[in-house]
Amino acid sequence: MFCKNKEFVTGFLLVFIFLGCAHPVSREVREKLDPNIKFESLIEDTGTFLGKRVLFGGVIVVTRNIEEGTEIELVHKNLDSAGNLEMGDYSGGRFLFFNKGFLEPEIYSSGRKLIGVGKVTGQKLGKVGDYPYRFPIIEIEELHLLNDVEQYPPSYWGPWFRSNLYSPYGPYYYR
Image (tube, rainbow, N blue to C red; front, side, top):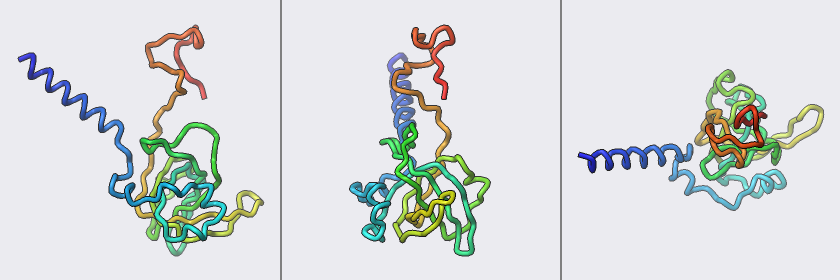
């Protein structure tokens, strides 16, 4: 009896661990990507990467529905190995995801986190405020909104650990 329960618990934990670490983009799609394409290189010379499939993510600035489809302007953020956006203020710049169909701007609203896979199709001259800016355009093949997962700094050990660094208020991380 105990042995069966032990197997069940072990199996349950393994499934839970693997599902918790699942990347939002399928393995088949990720295997077709060129891992050598960095966002900084794309910004410098978009023409070199035309037709290449890339995986990028960021925070939505604005979603515009135009006659040809939907443009989503994002502030680039690096991705970690699990497919989540890395914490911090670093950004390589801005880019556009383009979808040939309609995407609801209320769902793809400002401040939401988004990752996508697509082909580099060119660049578009636009503005960030009054500053002229060249946006790389990535035509979407796969798009995923990310849930707002609370990420803690590496020194955070868990909800029940009480460190003197946070006393007397408990182990809370304030942004």
